[in-house]
Image 1: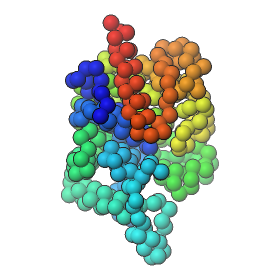
Image 2 (image 1 turned 90 degrees about the vertical axis):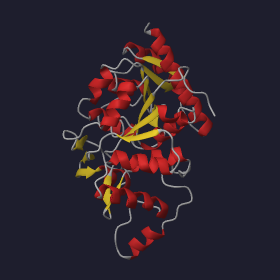
Image 3 (image 1 turned 45 degrees about the vertical axis):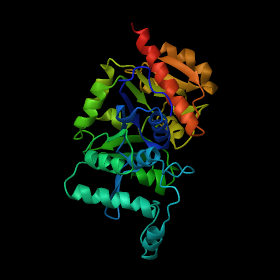
Image 4 (image 1 turned 120 degrees about the vertical axis):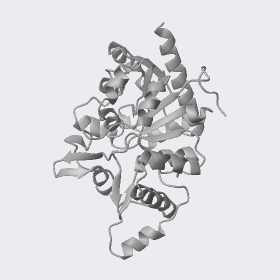
Length: 324
């Protein structure tokens, strides 16, 4: 087991979505933080399919922290089969979104609990407890928010853009349907209020971190927060290691570099962890009033995840001490 932050009472909050976010969250989970680790997860990727509520980012974080995620894809359950999906296909229904047989159990139970009136936050806690996860996994909101991607062919729900059409469309704009009515949950509010460190995982800044920051009042809380806030850049040497973040940033007019990421978070960010391949970006990041940390930011394996999490916490500790 790795060693946690120097302050044993420290409460670490990670904002995350997608595979990269889940990997870093798992790195923090290896630091023996237990329930002092909270992961606030994007839910704007959620959608309905076959009458079931699917929460891809929540489930990727859940499966990764439970140690059952497919290490090749980063999502889904290791060794899962797709007999149900194959039968759905035999009935002539579309099967563009891969759902494993064991994975379906998660969606069935979640949908049933929602039908019974449970909050998404309660359900996430129940699933995590059943799989032995001690960190708190919190959906960003209990109200539905849905990412819509504007393309030359018209608006697309996020999973249609991301999975069904394989991210081939040019992204003209992104908006979050329902964001004005949504609110951070009381659990999210409390976790942020109690946080001694806040980390933005190396997730897509537009569609993974973006919806969390777009929740009414949440960004202002970060701007005013006394704790150090550190992000890990999802862009390394001009590209995203996974997913469409690089193309999405470019098509929306943002610089595809750690500097571009820093600008998106500039109003509240204290520090940015960047890869050694981007060391020459450090001066430009400093000019934005953000401290850079140059390190190996690629997570090849579980040891890398823990190392990067540990370095990020040590960096946050330096930033805190530098304020005094």
